[in-house]
Amino acid sequence: MHGQGAEGADLGSEHPARDAKLAMIPILLYHSVFRGCSCNADRFALHYERFATHLDAIVESGRTPLTISEVGAGLRGERQLPDRPVAITFDDGYADTTDAIELIWMRGLRASVFVTTGQIGTVSMISSAQLGLLACRPDILELGAHSVTHPHLDELSRSEIESEVSISKQQLEHTVGRRVESFAYPYGAYDRRVRDAVVAAGYQTAVAVKNALSHQQDDPWAIARWTVRATTRAGQIAEVLEGEGAPPAWREERLRTRGYRKARRLRRSLSRRVGAWR
Image 1 (cartoon, helix red, strand yellow):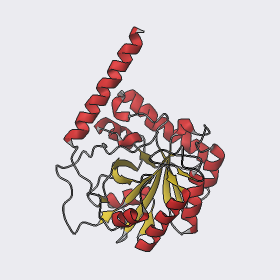
Image 2: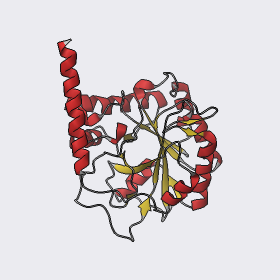
Image 3: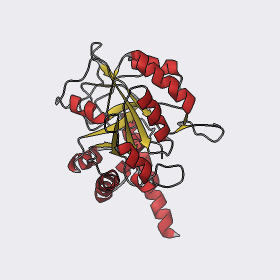
């Protein structure tokens, strides 16, 4: 279910931001934050104690924590961003996300959690009751949608895209009793059709992946994030927070993104054909 891909397209101008004076906006992407044995954890699941050191690095950086909706509003020119912003995000909606949010709250930080609504209440995933508790803390936490079934949205038909995008919004709003205004593309995968569907569904902002640093020229409906892995050290977090170790987000869809999308669509088409023959 991880949204770790860096393929998400940015469909704006041709070149990445190269202005040395351009203020970077580090946006960190986490998944599961677990306690106990790491023997069965995957490469994107971070141990609780290591996560705590990451948060300490964020606090020490002196950056101002924002939610994704606040970042999006800044990119749209609707609010003034602080000089040194940062955002912490979680994808998928794991049951252990509530423990991570507790650590965030203890340090005076804030976060955004993107939930795959079709997985709510399943094994290892967040429950409706947990979401209800998180929804009671709008001062520190934003809840956003992450589709219903976590597909590569750019492989789907237009009607399938619209369903995944709009129904996940409706389901999450019904569960938490709050408006849901932000969306995270599963796997960071999107194209023009997907972006347009997100805007049409009423989301005010959306995040991609890109493994790059956001900035004032970034797309408010495809904000760049940097993926945190199980092996990521606090020192690496500190470097990213200083605008090092990751490129500024690009504004043009990369050729390798297009190639990867074509390959995925071909595999999906062949799989459907094989299934129809059986």
